Length: 288
Ligand code: CP
Image 1: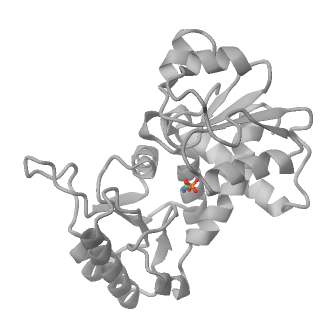
Image 2 (image 1 turned 90 degrees about the vertical axis):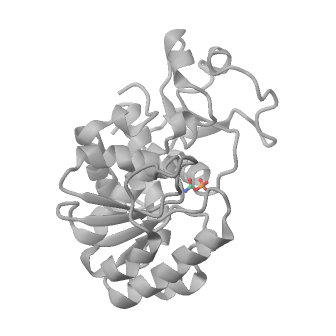
């Protein structure tokens, strides 16, 4: 695998391999991380804010003994319109892999033959967030032992959210896991973007679900967020075994009182980002 832009770059085998690698790395712990990336320089380009993805890639690189080069600098990219191919041509001798959160099209780099070093999409290219999906699947596997027979409710206001797109792509490789969409906004023509259940149905259907993955409002709709928060509270009352996931950062759709729910897993999901990103870096660079 040269780059990781979307989940389709991995396929089922690639995802399973990375989840197994992540489990091995978690078992070794931060103190036992192998120095697999000694001598490697990992470049970061973040043109949009990030707490979890940026810091977990950085920490993953450091834990595996790589050095980290912040290509974009403290103030972000100074040239907003600069093409990815130009950036690659400028920095590909400076680092061995680039982690990128930018809405660049990766095709421009591939077509120009400039992608000498692997590029990892950190959550904007092609509207995908593949390493978030790896952390999501890893967390589900950890909670249930396997993805087999899982019924996952995915709550989204719109279909275009990056973690929703990547998770839906991944679900195609895992037919043994059923994805049930809730709460997608209607298209201007009145038809839903995707077949989806109303958010209000969640409490009644909670007993048939293994987990609910809630995503933030894309339009910052207070109304939608309040509806989701109410439905979630009722759902965990009906099914106390329901695992709750969220990519974070949260909005009003995930009220803080749900942190006390015994199966809220979103902070573990964020922490699992370390193991899956260690696996991605080690695997793409052929060191793990
Ligand atoms: N989930 C996620 O991508 O978080 P950050 O934006 O903080 O990286």
